[in-house]
Structure formats: C-alpha cells, structure tokens
Amino acid sequence: MKEKKNRKPMGRAGSLLVSLLITAAVGFVYFYVSLPAINPQSGDFYSFLLLLCLVYTISVFALSVKPADDNVVRTPKEKLKEWFQFVKRSCLPVLILFAAIVAVAIVGQIISMPIFRASAYRELLTVQTGDFAADVTQISFDEIPTLDRSSAEFLGDRQMGTLSDMVSQFEYSGDSTQINYQGRPVRVAPIAYADLIKWFTNRGNGLPAYVVVDMVTQEATVTRLSEGMKYSFSEPLNRNIMRHLRFNYPTMMFATPEFEIDESGHPFWIAPRVVKRIGLFGGVDIQGAVLVDAVTGQCQYHEEVPSWVDTLYVPTLIMQQYDYYGTLVHGFINSILGQKDVTQTTSGYNYIAMNDDVYAYTGVTSANADQSNLGFLLCNMRTKETHFYTAPGATEEAAKLSAQGVVQDLGYTATFPLLLNIAGEPTYFIPLKDAANLVKTYAMVNVARYDIVAIGDTVPVCEQKYIQMLTDKGVTQTEQLPQTEATGKVAEIRTAVIEGNSFYFIRLEGEQVFYSLSAAQNREVVTLNVGDQVAIDHGVATEGSESSILDGYSLTITRRAPIPYVPAA
Image (cartoon, rainbow, N blue to C red; front, top):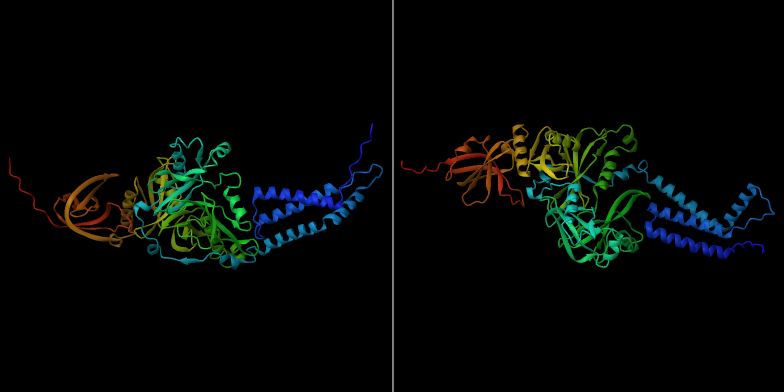
C-alpha cells in the first residue's frame, strides 16, 4: 500500500493570486446582492471593505499554511508565534488597511455626533413662521382626501380582483405614493409579479399596468400601459430598480425610490439622492434625485427636479430634522437636562394637497409630549419649504379619541387627522372607518377646542354642522365667516331633513347653485315662496370648487311675490 503523500503548500505568489481571485468573486457576489454605495459617507461601504479584507486574509492563510509535521511537537505559544509571523509576512498591508478602515469609521461616527455639532444639526431645516388662515386656503370638497393610506391600498388591492386577465399573473404591490395628478390627490402604485414563475413567463413584456386610487371619490382604477414597465422592485435580477440605479450610479447613496406618474400618466421611479452634511456620517439630507423611466430604464439625475415630482422628501426625514431643530435650540446639554424651549414633532403625519404640490403635516408638542400641541408644521415634499403655525390645542391622538367617542356605539376607528382651514379655524378632518377598512363617516374637530366635534355622513354635511357649532360656541361669528350676498327672485325651493335638522335649498333665477339654509337658524325661510325677492348671505365658493350647494347664513325677504287669486269653486 502506497503511503499517502502530504499536499505541498502553495507558493507565495500562487496563494496571493488565488486569494485575490477568491476575494474578487466574494466581493462581486456581495456587491450584487447588497448593493453598497462606493462612497466614504456610506456605512455599507466600510462593511464591504472590511469583508474584502477578511476574505483575503482567510484565503491567504488557508492556501499557505504548512501541513502538520507529526515528528515536531510545538507548544500553543510556538504555534501562535508562528501564525503571527505568517500574518505579518503575508497580510500586513491588508491588516493595516483593516485597522485604518475601523479607525476612520469610529472617528467619523464621533465627529458626526450631535453633542459636538448641535448648531449644524439645527441648520439642516429652515423653519419659517406662517399665518395659517392666510397661507392655508379653504379647499373645496372635491380636493379633500377622504382616505388614509391603508384604506387606499385596500381599495387598490380589491380592484385587482376585477381583472380576470391579470389577477392570476400579477398582484397589487402595496407600495403606493400619494401625489397630485391632474389637480387631484391620488395614490399610485405599480402592480407586481405574483411569484418567481410568473416573473419568468411575463418578464419579456414587463408589468402591464399600475393602479390609481382617487383619494376623494374613493374610486380605484387600473391604468393599462401600451408598453409594460421593465424596471421595478419585483424584478429579481438586473432590472431590479435598486440594482439598476447602483450599476448606473455606483457612488451615489439613494433613499427608497418612490413610484410616480407624470401629468401624461407615464410611470417613473423617483430616487432621491442622499447626502451627509455633517462630519462623515451625520446630517442626512436630500440633494436632487435620479428619475428612472419605469418602461425603458433611462436614468437622468436632476439637481432641481421637475415640478410634477411630488415626493423628493419623505415626512419621516422632515420630522427628524425638525426634532434636531426643536431639541437643540439651546445646545445639546439643554436638550437632555434643562430642556428649556425644547419642542418636538408628534408621532404621526398626513398629507395636504395645495397649489398642485403635496405638503406633509405633523404636530409640534413640548418635550414632555403631553396631550396638547403648540402648533404644527407644513412642509412641501418637493422643495422642503417648511412653515410653523402657532395653534395651541389637542394633539392628533387626542382628536382621534374625541371623534371616536362620538361614534363609539358604531365601533368606528379614526384615521390619522388631516389638517384643514375651515372658516379660518385650524381643524382636524378625520375619516372614520369600519372593521372592513371602509370609510363610513367623517368628523371635524377644532384644534383649539377639541370638545367641538361635528359628525356627518358626507363632507359637506359635516362641514355645515361644524361651522354651525363654531358659531354656537362663540368661536366665530357669522359675520366673520368668508361670505358674500346674493340677491334675486326665488326660482326653486327644495327641502330635506339632515340628521334631524330641516334644511331649505333655495335657487335664484338665472343661477344654477342652491343656497342651503337651516330652518332652526332662519325661521323665516319656512314662509318663503317661489317668486319672492330675497337677499342671502352665503359662504364663498373656494377656488376650483364645482360644488352646486353653498352654505347660507342669513335670509332677508325684500319683497313678497303676490299670491295669485284662486276663485272659490
């Protein structure tokens, strides 16, 4: 029987070459899967470098180590000394690089900490003081979103079930973005491949549609594309949107891309470029974005994004930057110990559509995070222009509980409030959902006095009751409400009982609009006849509103129409 020969260790040059090849192979796989930015401000970049150093060192050691000699007995100390000598001889440059990377990462973290750079962190966000009644105009009913994100995505997912030719191959992605599309607040989301097999059989044509949910009418539609989207998150290989971005921009850091459509309905991915403005790792901010055509994959970086883009920033980043602004007002030590003048954002946010832009709203409270707000922020999600409005009152959570308390017998749950300007008053608008995630009714809660809660099955009814409660409680006077006078001859009278209250709807000759008057507040309206000459003080229609009903506040009959003589039978 032949004696088994011991394997000779690989030569120095050979082991180094093979180790480099192994390191390159592992590095390529890691880069392809994890997609780290080749950027010294990215923490993933340092992890990538450390992994390469570790793989190289292990490979060199494994390929160069000598086989054990049974005739030589070495103590553990001698073995350790021999190992260190080998490492020093073969891997010293790599070990120096490893130590340097660790040192840079540690020092970078330290010099980026708020304790040393408090003023720089405060300057991340510029906050202006605004006048709520002047800046936030009353929006019309056809512009008020009545859904929250979960409800909108529930409707979008349910709409997929109506498409028999798609439902077995594709599914609703659940990754929606709120935008303004052709002047309306909507949520848009791409569809996704149902599974890996469905991707393999359909990838040639791409994703054939996206879902649009109107946040006002609660209508969900599937928009089919003439050419499918080839780039998305549901692509597992090179056409995955993150991998496509990384291969085209290897040094850029990106926030999570958001799906949007332009005004013509063409789909894009908006990938905000992340920069660190403080030290090496601190002060996360956004500087422009890469716009990726979801159909062709064409990429273009914009320092200033087009005006149709609505989601360059995200509310969580703005809230983080305001927390720096509010807590570091007198330095880092004060933010921990004295907390003089320290403020912070509340726990949630919502969106408001104004001037064809999307604004994020969140409340501002004291450091104690009690049940009262000091005011609130509105931030443009495209430009980061941020305003603070002083409005002491209830927090969003307190307002939700107040609204739920009115309908507690029905078991409805409140969505996160939307901030509106109703009759010049900061007002929480709160859709209330049932267990099936469908909106059933609406509430309006006054920010300053959250005991003023109006409930209505429709937004106009809710607003009418809310405005009346403001007047009854002395918060506003009728003459303070935005209004004008209409005069003319009564052409038509209609009546309705709304939640136990009698309302008269008056149309004047030559007009299409009806003026709504409460019989409880204007008793003379019950004596009104067609042909009477009247003057009606009424609310002002908001810009862009197409409502056919306006709130009437007072009625004056200036001349009675003659009652026609009817001879006795």
